[in-house]
Image (cartoon, rainbow, N blue to C red):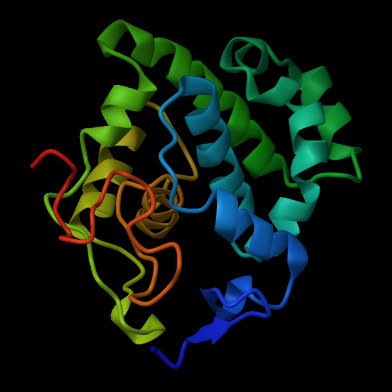
Length: 205
């Protein structure tokens, strides 16, 4: 088993980042790497990955209920209509990350999400960048911070008006929503998404 994996009291192997904190463990066991294929869910993930920039994911996860309340549960239609008064309201909301640029990006990205419906929608657009194969990392050293697909997705989203969607942020998104399976080999979650059987090729390929 990889040295980066820790076997918990339940006998299940997880990476160290998902082993020490109960909230992170639940996220890893139930959400991370599972497919997100609805517009609202994918828009939320893009926003939260943007807010996470420069911070830990644990911080964002703990604040997620407050984020959802502040951003109308990430309904793109509602957030797209936010005004400067809403921005000021959010800047005074201690439950979220109070960063004007990131708040404005969430509103900008809501408008871009709505606009993308005319071209098939956000979900179809993002998932079109799914690679032909997924990595099979044995350790953290095997996991890069970007990929050709995350670079391409970042550029494409920026052309569509999105912001805070850099290549590293998009690579994290691709991991989180199951577009790639970066569960370490030996983890109890490896191959669990249904997108990537253990062969490393897409389901149905």
